[in-house]
Length: 341
Image 1 (cartoon, rainbow, N blue to C red):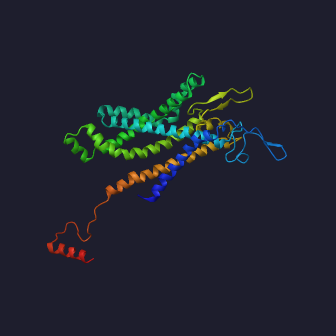
Image 2: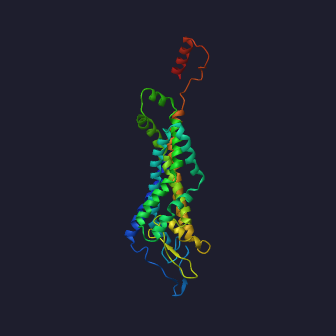
């Protein structure tokens, strides 16, 4: 196995694992990270020279949010919610996508046309609009305290997972249908192989490699979707808000500091304090880059290497030309030349 591929796979995985570990350890090692607000910054003479939100120069490395809490600490604390929820969403997508792909593969042709046409409609509607429509009234229930935050997260994970299943099921189903046209599949059917036997013996081993690569791609797509939902103030765990006065806007807050919520809370401050929006977007960009690196290396290791191995032809002696008749003496001469080399 190529060392570059191993490095390109294990290095980003290690960074992601360390980020999750740091997210769990931060509240243990520093219990007051979300309470130790810095009201003012003073110079050596005691003169106040800055008030929150602090810029990255005033409070390195990323500045502070509106109440004076360290923005970097908040993003580290919220990493576990963003990463683990995204992995859970991608996993559910793959499970239900694979099942729907199997159903699609073995559907009768009469039913197949209508199912395919109906499912393809979802490819022309932005997923963020569908998710927002599904969760709008659920979010209102959360805002009215009729729904707990943990329950809301579970509903959100399921909703974000199922919206992709129609198009993902068709994609995987079409791949499976092409695979089922292979000669060895027809031979297995001729010998009495059932659909269950074909799935267990042929389809599952073949699409396990594809599913691993597709799983990593789904994680990146889910992260991008969370950013879009964050702009629409729809975040994992939901946002609470305190109504503002006559001249002030409502103050949003989130109890788990999930990254998309950090975007939602600060979209209106992009021109005044841009680092409040840039910081979570930077974390999202780094995470998407890491998962894209994992995906590209998995593709080389599991798919392209396998295809190269299958497509590799046997070496043929260039002196043997097709269409020409050779005598036993000719083959003896070739054999002697090989021995002398």
